[in-house]
Image (cartoon, rainbow, N blue to C red; front, top):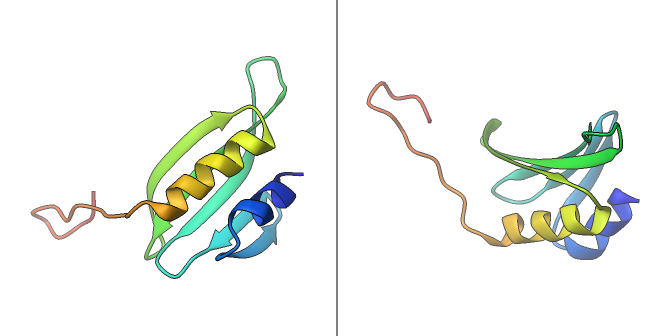
Length: 91
């Protein structure tokens, strides 16, 4: 259900189905969409954004496949960046 919604919105990404969710692989980032439990034990989803194999942001929870696919499409279109700290590590 979530994979279908993502496929319809992220046509420029390669989708990989993994044990805990779906990963959309783009040229400069990865968007991992995973299920999480909502407050009443209902299904929710979150999106984690990774650049150079480092997580730089996490978004959610989202209550519907459409909502998480919409947010993933927005994240795919936005510029992504991270800050390098004085010790040389990303923050």
